[in-house]
Image 1 (cartoon, one colour):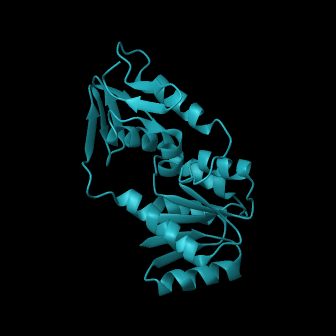
Image 2 (cartoon, rainbow, N blue to C red; image 1 turned 120 degrees about the vertical axis):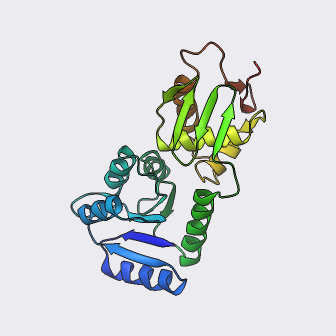
Length: 225
């Protein structure tokens, strides 16, 4: 994989570059937020590894600007800030995964591999549809009844997961693990908030709702009431 590492700690960066290179990854390095943002916007990378606390521009600011530019390159956030609220903030900013320092290098490699598998997903179809709702996965384009619906990166991942499980009841645990990559309950309303936002965009102003709440169990996306 071609990885961009944005890390200001030179010893930590050298350690990561050495380890990733030994595992046959190509690594470019930026030591501050401004250089990192420029490289992320102008280069082609499979994954970004971004430290949260950086000079000139913090890591979450970089991620937000990339997402605003419709750059959906997967991002692993590295940070010594490990409280639940910190992790939730990092993921809400557009990060795909969050790893707390200090960490085991083997875990970092495993998380990068998992992110790459999710990103590639070459075995699945490039277009998904449920009724008049359509998702072009490669173009990140969503339409319903021919009308373009603009979604944020996390909303796109959430919708794609629902569409790949059309007609099935999707539980909160499934969403936490598969969309947020949480293997614990963060004890927040992050899922409820994102579901509400997604529902307002794909169902509001349309006669028949597609995203249904299965009380006490989870959610289901299909044409049936």
